Image (tube, rainbow, N blue to C red; front, top):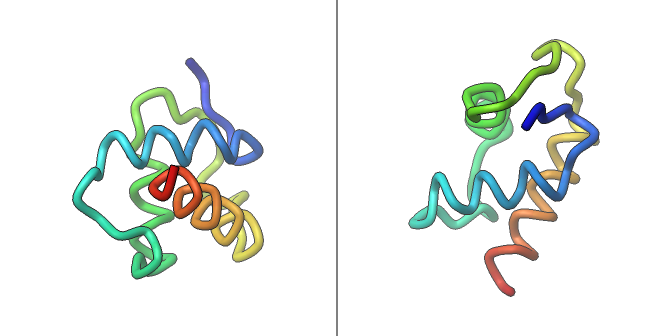
Length: 67
């Protein structure tokens, strides 16, 4: 699976699986960025992310954790 920055929901699910003991509400964007880039299957330019994308991923992860 090739993940891109636009695959917000899929990234959130992958992060929830990789970091089950982390409360996504308290993750710093610098850490979140690195964790996304480090995901197996992530295949996008790390420099293409921005605050809006990271915020969307964090919100989707929060929703995923609460589901």
